[in-house]
Image 1 (spheres, rainbow, N blue to C red):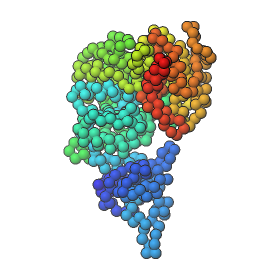
Image 2 (image 1 turned 45 degrees about the horizontal axis):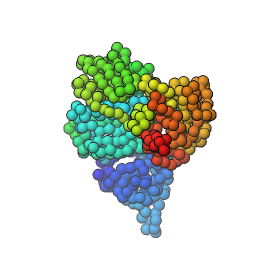
Image 3 (image 1 turned 90 degrees about the vertical axis):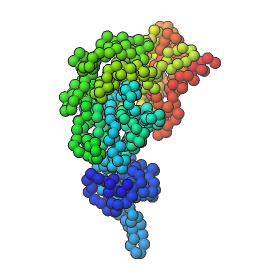
Image 4 (image 1 turned 90 degrees about the horizontal axis):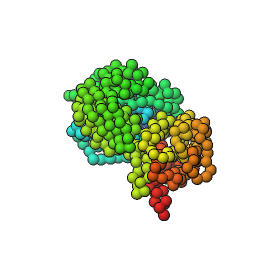
Length: 527
């Protein structure tokens, strides 16, 4: 594609080079640059892409888009011989005000508006995004659609699955994936949209048709600074900020428009969000004033039964998911499907067909019939909800194993410790993804909250009267401890990592899967 076409609709502050240059690819990672690529320098939290422009040029970049080009011009266009010829005379340099926003627009141009024939559904919220995306995917399949999903666990469409590196990819990666989905005939794409992605404008070029809000509780305050800023980032999905409508014939930009909003009105932030939206809105919750709600709810170890009440009638729901928090995820998916025009019988059938979600209240089947559940809960609210769900099905002792991630919001560690200590019979504090922090310091902050709950530390094996906590910073050993102290009447809940297949220690990822560790611990116990 010609550079001129890549830059259509972009405000350029400075240009040096040939707009008719052929561009063969677009990236923000200098290591991925190949000959003919356009490299966009992004300023990140820990690194600045402007520092890697020289690497991009060395790897064959044909054009550079950046916010700062002064030093680049001095460095790249110095004469390299007596004749005064530029050493990279074929290189085009474009200065822009905000390279991150520009990257999104360039990606849409380069991949030629891949979402013209696709319904884009964005789901945001602290908890529930992944489960809601799985439920909605199942409903869409049963409705005869060809859905794709871009989410925390993976990106999947047309029988293909790619492990996810982040919840919401950077804009150019997101648009490239949408391009591949479009070529595969995908009709609807469900996107889990993180607050980071919204704050950084990663989906600003994507015309979201339906925006879903699940809930908002404490998380990512290390990035946003306050709950109010965290909420403000979430609102961008619903106000249509930076998004544009595509005309059906030419695939060009025209007027901006707000998406249909699907909002959890039982969440206090949901009420605030509803007041900010100016498009149509479908509300859900357990309150009778909601458009979509559940009544006559029955919960048990085998799942959920309820009546789904909608503006288009009622229908019996059955789901294999457990816990009242999953009732909300079911309602979110049902309300979204209604916004898409799917009938309620099809919605109910799609919900019933979902067997489970990887790493979300996932029961680990084993030969010893020991109840062990792995869940991704890594916030105080999520941990409280999964422990409450586990309480509903456990007959004996509830043993909770968890830690907290390093280099992330430190304030939630004490809160999670208090929740675990108050709601569990036994807690095993361990390491999660410590990253560059000392695991012992992270654990001490968790323990402070556990002590505030009134739970005492234990220094010997459990007895029938024991209630307390242990600390074992080796996650594998901690899981083995919990499994060994439990019997078939107890339940072991391992929280924090869920579907993850790695542990981040320092700046490196090491293979680690809670689910495999459980089975390994049980096998060793039989020996």
